[in-house]
Every structure is written in C-alpha cells, then in structure tokens.
Image 1 (cartoon, rainbow, N blue to C red):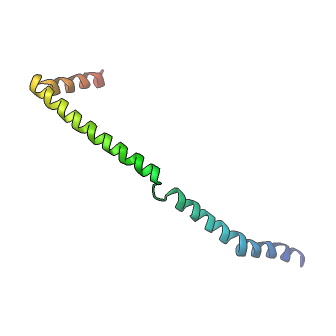
Image 2: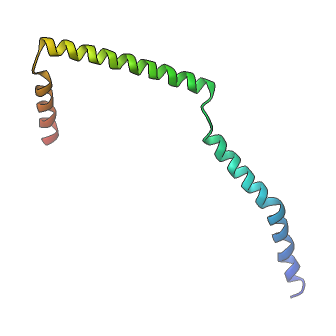
Image 3: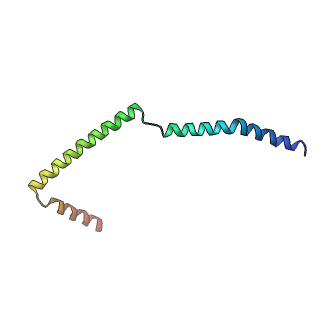
Length: 88
C-alpha cells in the first residue's frame, strides 16, 4: 500500500503542475484565434459584399418605383399570389 500512494501522487502532481496549465493556456489561445478579428482579406471581402448589397438595394428600390408607376397594384397581387402558394 505504501508504494501505491506515490504511484498516484507523483503523476497527479506532474499533471497539475505541467500538463493542466499548458492545456488551459492552449485551450484559451485556440479559442481566441477562432474568435479573433477578421483578416485583411476577409475584411476586404466583407466590404465588397456590403457595397454590392447596397447597390442591389438601390436597384430594387428603383425597380419598385418603376413598377409602382407602371403597374399600380402589383404589390397586392404579389402578396395574394404568395398567400395562395403558402396556403395550398
């Protein structure tokens, strides 16, 4: 029984002093990297997508205003058609 206690005690101390702190450090380091800021390329891509989305929104507004002038009741008809598709 006397030899059994050091057999558990020494590995436990080694784990707590060396392995556990490294494990915790590496865990939070990898977490920080995965949640870190965007890279320069990702930021550029995001800005380009935002600009394209803004352009598309402007185009949609323009198209809707044209449709409002040329076909006054198009929104109500579109909503009625969507309602029929959902209810069937």
